Amino acid sequence: METSPSNAAAATRAPLLEVSGLKKYFPIRRGLLRRQVGTVKSVDGVDLTVGVGETLGIVGESGCGKTTLGRCLIRLIPATSGKVTLSTPGKKPVSLLELNAGELRSVRPHIQMVFQDPQSSLNSRMTVGDLIGEPLVVNGVLSGKALTDRIVELLEAVGLRPGDMRRYPHAFSGGQRQRIGIARALALKPNLIIADEPVSALDVSVQAQVLNLMTDLRDQFGLSYIFIAHDLGVVEHISHRVAVMYLGKIVEIGPTKELFNNPKHPYSEALLSAVPLADPAAQRARTRIRLEGDVPSPANPPSGCRFHTRCRYAQAVCGQDEPGLEEVSPGHFAPCHFARALSLIGVQA
Image (cartoon, rainbow, N blue to C red; front, side):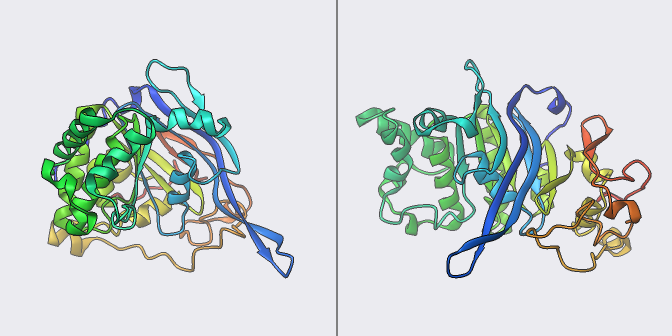
């Protein structure tokens, strides 16, 4: 794999997407009358921004809310509250959560999604050409020969052959199917693509090919990505900045190199301790941090800092007061009472 993107210009990028106080609560219903008895706080007050041409990686263990966050941003599921503003070049910023169905349809071309499982996200009864061309047909963008030419152009952009447009998804490997999914997402020339663990179902060698393809497409078309994953090595490779989620909240966000080398939240330190190192001697010498206890239920999160029940640095204040995001270094934020006092170990160490 190539090295991770440079962070030099990340802080100065114009904002494309701005998220403020985003929440998604799922009701818990019980009894014969299905009365609501509680809520699952899957996403609970997330703030973040994505710049033009930037890749923001979102990582965290299963159940932390990262996929729900991505689906709320693109309005596949309705958010409970919050604000999401999309600023496309040459157009007035729009608040995505306030748009009605007609208004949302006009904005859809600017924000697309690549799903985790390429097999289930592609209709097996449609040819590849029909799958890629469907967004263009539905939105009335192209037809006839112009449509065919655009499909061929997209297939070649993702490393497939023009003749593949007449084949069906089952005839392709997992990596090739994901390339088809990426081509479909590119069809309407979006500004932002939300990629929900797009390489987690692929072999390691194929992962590298798809990641390099996404990097090339970002540079070629000026795309921005929200890249959701649980593999920190993958996120480091492609992201300019990384946001770490735990139990519905962002617990750290900052430039990739800074966060990996100098984490400021104990949960980030624990995740980074599990990243494999290329040097066997360094791998043997490092200490793996094993978190004790179970992940608390998002239906009944702990008071104060949500991580304090599993944190080895926790003190009394951690269970009483919830810390806010604090900028511990330029562009590097962490909600921890002791973010400046702790000396945490990064992946390079």
